[in-house]
Length: 461
Image (cartoon, rainbow, N blue to C red; front, side):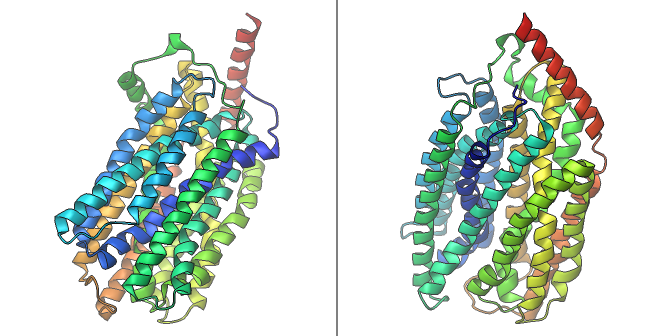
């Protein structure tokens, strides 16, 4: 149980793996559905089903991976080996995902997407659950934890920039952005770059965190998996936090999956224009806002900033996106600036989860960061699966025609309703649910004092 201040290289080195993890996530969230429906020619509903099944598998496997890493004991630590192995597997699977063979039948296309994306999500589970759990164990001090997860979010945003900008930049450099051959080439090259990023970043994190992954597992407190899983779900503090975050994540998934459709068919903007002039500024502002959210959470606690950040993002989304005029970049750019500020508050949620894990240790005497973060990510993945599946069906329902370079004005308006009020509703609802989170900063400080006394007693035995 470390109370000492972490050195900056350790915090940065820990967060670096999130670059590759998030690059894969955003690359697939933004480009995968559109790639397989418009370029590969897979039916929208079938694509949504394939992606949803894969994400559901990812969700189911998350708690199991957390449990496994909780009770792993090797000379390399209990989390770090999975960061290394998962990075290699994820690197390979991303290469396969955006380099599909020539397949003529809908069943064949569906089967390929399903099988390879299952592999991607399995590898993602292996690396991401132990990685986020390790972040909660690097320090016991509240503000230091917020700083650790701040660096994790910082590198996550670098990953977002890579996963978002690289495919669009490559496509722009090839000339005709509507050419299927150019789109396929850009996605293949981007897949190779993202693959290299996840490989390098996971190896660096594995190396830099050496000696920081040495918490002993207390076997006498070990519960069977299903009993331990059930006891976590009985933690009301955790359930409120999880439910709020899951609801908000549905909104984030809708946002990512529908973004390129909205900007192209509602606002008439090219992919490169959207990525470079709207999405890039959004993520740059988000990165710059992290220091603000870390600072304000130290000054007034975590709950109030987290609420206003998510609520503000939802309110902004509901109001502005249906109103933007066709063909203009300035209005969505202004919205991206303010949206980036609000979105930076997301780092506080992960930090609050570590406080809940402390409360669980206080009640049970068992350290279960991996299981908690596994269930946390399971809930997030289920919400992503729901969002992806609904997106595919919604595209069919609103009359979207695959393969056409233009859509009707009615389709554009319906896309605006999904991208605006549809997305914003989930952000607002999630923030309201979060208001019922019962663990106050004062109570958590008291819990940490008790845990510290327990640890000192064990050391003096």
